[in-house]
Image 1 (cartoon, each protein chain N blue to C red):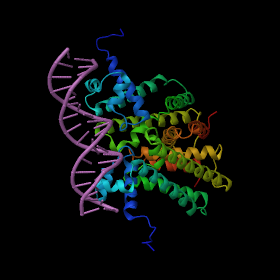
Image 2 (image 1 turned 90 degrees about the horizontal axis):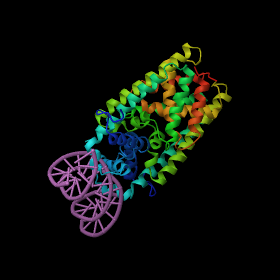
Image 3 (image 1 turned 135 degrees about the horizontal axis):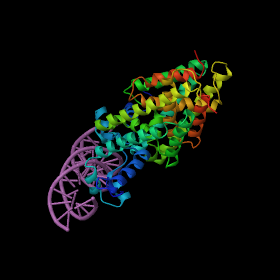
Image 4 (image 1 turned 120 degrees about the vertical axis):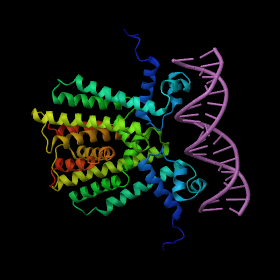
Length: 192
Length: 192
DNA sequence: GTCTATATCCGGATAGAC
DNA sequence: GTCTATCCGGATATAGAC
């Protein structure tokens, strides 16, 4: 079963894992096939076999984020809004704990002007999906009487997304930053 | 007076201006001396005369941001808190209107792991100063009875800073983003 | 202060052997 | 599927003429 004929090659997956780590720490422009291949213990031509162009690797990474986001959303569709918020916070926290990574959307936004077109399209789609989920969370929380905040669900969802993205980045300079942002978001939602 | 012997050369200033534009649109890793020199209409060796190493240019840029921030703060020290908030928003807006730039702290955070040490030190200091100012704004606003929010001034100041930084980045993908963030921050502060 | 010319290195990418 | 070998372009940086 684990060696099904259509299974993605292990090497391909390991390349994606290493590239993801590099993307979220260094950024797309600042990582090279050399860094991936040396980490993997192969030559850089081997990477080109799996991903002919760097753009292919970048697009594959964002596509994987999008699939992962869909599974993340489905996996906790039955949780109450405050539970979902906790999971959202844990996701951000797990990025930070792993070498002070930033979230994918944050890295892709700041590098946006230098990304190849295909990556920009994927990034915009990914960010749109994150945005929608954040807004729906704010909406369900209010409808369920769990969250209490001024303004529309769209405004509050967009603000939470923005604050977490910025907070995760600023945590690189001050370890307490992300905790502060999470605490204040909960307060502004009237939770706890 | 304008040609005082100790005046910084015009070329040096123009290099900084062009480099700043490139830093806030493309990032430090994604801009080159070639891009600066061609924009300036000189050869790249001329840039090296003014800034021998790229690190020197990067450090000079952040030092200028720090001086500018100090002047920005002083210039509106007498404004009421809600007026200062407006100026803060206008600053973010002006970045966005200029080729969808992000704020310096946002770019420096995401590239943090790849920056030379001297730039990291400057970036950390700059961000610390931004953080303090944002917190003091939240504090004065509450003390003056203009802002009304839950949590401490530190928590609210850090949240505003984070949300504006993230919002400015995400505005690259969706033009309405920054306006939404500004509107919601004002609402959360109980302003207007 | 700016130029030409060049050194050095590194990045993405390809060809062809195994 | 991975290797060796190589090409090409671009980036930082320096030397020395003007």
